[in-house]
Amino acid sequence: MIPILARKNRGLVYLLRDDFNDTRASGSVNGTPSTPGPGTRLVTDTAGTKVSVGASVISISGSNTLTGDPGYAFSTTIARLAGTVLVCSLPSYNATAQAWIGINSNGNIHLNTMLGMYCGVGQLYARNHGVSIAVGSLTSGQAYKTAIVLRASGLFAFTKGGTQYTSWTLNWVETSGTSSPLYVGMSNYATGQVQTYDFIRFPISLWLPIPLASDSFNRANGVLGNTDGSGHAEANGGNGLAWTDKIGTWAISTNNATCSATSGSIGATTVYLGTGDAIISAELTRSAGNVGLILRYTDSSNYAYAYHDGTNVTMRQLVAGVDSAVVTAAAGTYVAGSAIIATVSGAAVRLYYNNVLIGTGTLNSALTATSFGMYTTDTGNSIDNFIAWARGTGGEYAILDKFIK
Image (tube, rainbow, N blue to C red; front, side):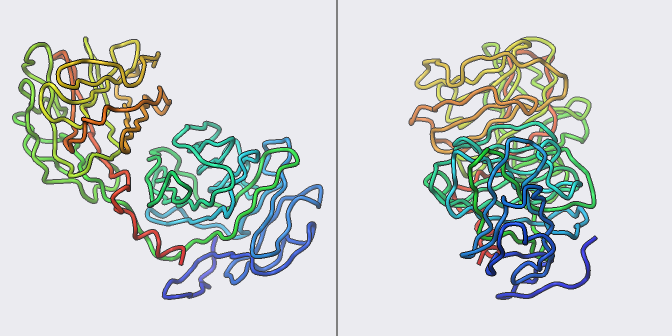
């Protein structure tokens, strides 16, 4: 576990910090003090030629194994504590290498069991114990910073940099993974390719994002009323927003949201988020028809909607009453209570079900409204734990900048 010793710099106190501002030849990095510290380096480099420090970066040359060899970690572990922040920087992303940044109970940052971010072949992935989920794109040669914020279970994954992420962007919200204590570090998997990092830091300060809206629906049967702020694990915000029935009539039934009466075989209810760029999720229980999310609702002729029909998951849009596909329907094995997730930034959307990417698409430019919510075509369907997070395009997560200065 990490010792009491910590180091202050520019108003921040760090539990672990390495800016790599010393020089260490390959084969001689393991066991050296991180600079400016605190921390001691734990390097896995069986060949003795893969990991070096110089010119204010650590260089990790890849291998063809998924064992975390070569890799870097701090030799001391941290306890899992909600709000703990890890920040790491890639000064020039190498799209032919595969950068792995994250936490692990294994000191060599074993790639198949780590929890964190994976940057490879122009794509950004969230990584969870052997499963990679595509959450964005990256461009070779551009600089990126990542921030991983621990939850009691899971993490929040943010990125800033390149042409894609001009402000801190929330890429993924992971709900599973409770291992503790944890090592923190990075590794590379790509034979003969080099990935460099110019800092990795764990500040002592805790921080957690606050959702725009969150509702557990755990209240008496009746009208939906206002969001309760308890639809997510931290229960630290997202309450007090009024649900407004747009199509049909919605209500609480046995601690779930349901549509008691549809109109034209459709039910839709929304909350006003104040931004059109968000990550929206809800847990679905389907009886019949379609059930899912409503996005950027303007009126009954202009909105996008994503749903599970029992076999496939898809996203469509209505623009001036004309219906068209946004994300082409793809198979998504229905599991009662699993979440449908949509990320929206500008016109770009990504659709997930049960933590699997269904597809990507582009919204019509006419859809700019900032109301989001729930959708169904059958009164027997129910929805639980609706959550909306800001994507970050409006600077909502600028506080993360203080951890990289």
